Length: 128
Image (cartoon, rainbow, N blue to C red; front, side):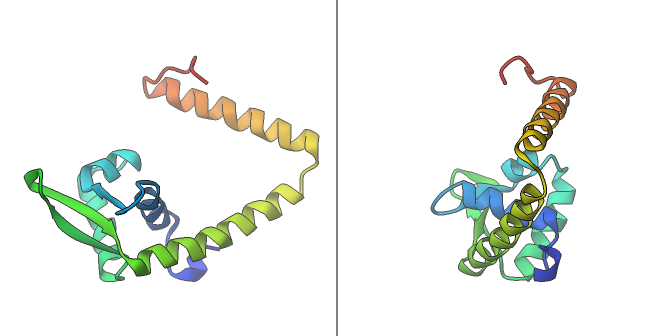
């Protein structure tokens, strides 16, 4: 699906995190690493690949001389939209294979997993 567009899921996730930031589609490298649960070194490697592909660019952070902001390029935005459509079609295909009861059961199981992940990471599982 996404791999057919020369993106890994993890790279697509970074592009999505930038899209979700809203215009001008920027986040600090640290915020991206935290959002995707990556070390700063792993995020640097991922950003290097995305920058080389022309999907993101690094900018100096005007509020922190040592900081870097990552901005989604126009090409990166187009790539994310294109692959999001592919991912949505894939998810619709999966959803079409399930009846209403099965979808409700899957949703319940996924919710249990999410709550357990949050609990094990020290989050408050009672919120959801």
